Image 1 (spheres, rainbow, N blue to C red):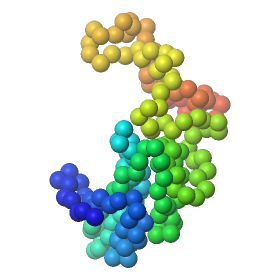
Image 2: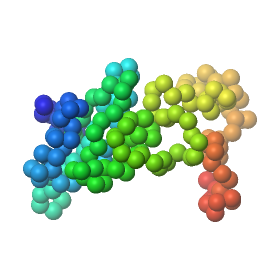
Image 3: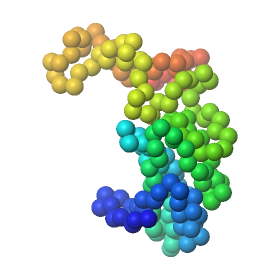
Image 4: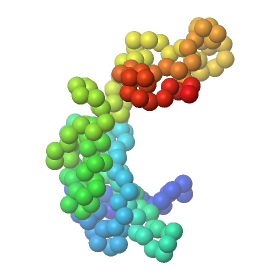
Length: 176
């Protein structure tokens, strides 16, 4: 296990997947009792980096923050669950499973995506089908787009695919 300083954020430790639960449990027992979040990063083609943010709370308004990370292989994306150390990790593991397809070894019911959704949208190889079906009307640089900006619909008024009209679900239209 290595302890590294990050000049742009909290300290972090990198551990092997086999030490994942043991490390987090030891840190909890050392006073890092505040579980903040858990997620993953797709480091294609190497695998998935699992990251957890925990903190040791001190005087009011002060905390020692720590990120703990591990890399799991892409061809077998599984790691032991942290729910024994932090019960709140279950929610984060469900989301990470849904978005990246990582197995945490417990029931991972869908959380965010609609029923029947296929794939894991935060994986690098996931195709954004809406961009395939309809080209992006905007441009990166002025003069780069073939679309006439006077006739292009405003992105603000466009709903993503699958999102119902606000009048159907009681919401407010974006222009309201």
